[in-house]
Length: 189
Ligand code: GAR
Image (cartoon, rainbow, N blue to C red; front, side, top):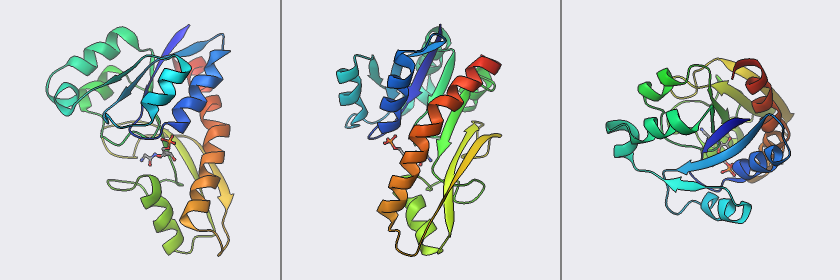
């Protein structure tokens, strides 16, 4: 069984969806969730789903090797599900093609620093886009720049608010993220 470690900074609805998907899997399971935000709702979800979860700080992520060492012992694959910090080079190098992120837009559009969550959907709305979507990609040291693994689109109308757009994006994420993680594990891990 491959061990999936999820990083999440906020609500964690994708984390929950991935945890549930892999509960019945024969190839992998979510063994731990890590968060940089002590108030993250993802902690409540993990408690309810009986999955170990831990808080870490910037020091243990970027300056010393606490998080890296933990991952080297505990993780076969790392999944970023609404995680907002850049991954340090030493972690990227230790897990080549084994860190996957989901971005709530069609990269390379609407990517980069500051482009996360509702900020993305507001920008999509302001630009009157007729479609948006999700991008699942490998992670390198730059925000939202690693090789793309999968994209899916959804159509938008003038009536869609940023909140509607977020809902459409979450629907795509729940449908495609677990399956794509599974494909990456079967191919690479
Ligand atoms: C998701 O839509 C994810 O794509 C996005 O944050 C949301 C987290 O929702 N990620 C980013 O914007 C990363 N740049 P969740 O906490 O309910 O899974």
